[in-house]
Image (cartoon, rainbow, N blue to C red):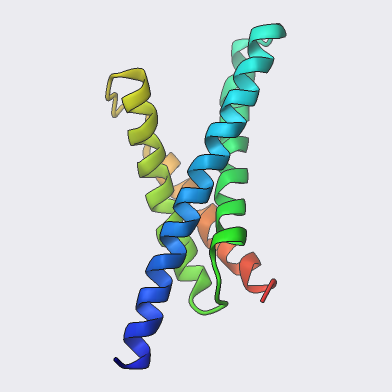
Length: 127
């Protein structure tokens, strides 16, 4: 097996690991926020910014904790950000038992790719 094949396999493992971690982080943060909403009086305007914050934290921590090597982290981050947005859409659509493509916008995808790329660069600094 050549070095390029090993690196590609490592990159795929890093992205999968980051996806698993980020989905777990998202679920935990959403449950915490749901408890806060239940016991506090939040306006409707708070939900969207908190949702964006949860996505940002989840993508950032997924990259930081999931990427093992410093090779190709920018590219891995872009791919991971895209996959995270798509996977989180599918998971939360399944939980709500309806798929509404109007909820996911082009800007959600751009946001996920941008945050993933930036987080991948930051993950390079750790190793």
